[in-house]
Image (cartoon, rainbow, N blue to C red; front, side, top):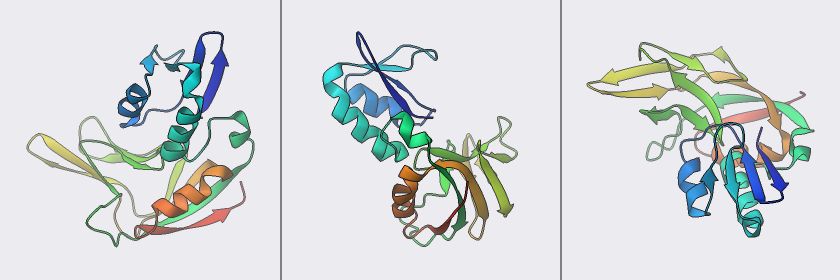
Length: 170
């Protein structure tokens, strides 16, 4: 859940891990205050922080975004090989802030992300020397559970040239 809270000192962002978050948060003047608090920002960064949440997770950081949840059925069809989204080099595979698959610590296999159920195909891990790639192969189909309806358009846009999705009831 991505949530922006206002307190007496400013704004707190509680959000799941994303590999690009610290870079963007620091650019907005954010400071990491640990797992309990999350990222802290000055109050004047509220609009930029909401825009960051929309760009990374497809939601605006309000609790209302998580009141209306749907399930998505996603078919992987990678057509844009210049910028593949179904590969994570030394990282997990993300789709609009959601971890879809991650390699195990031993780099011998990969596992689905939280709230992801593969119906066909499965994520895998390839290694070469000290590097690894987490991949979701073409033709894979998975369910993305408990997805905020607010994020659907952002996900649909991210899938352009990379796959298709269908919105199912929650």
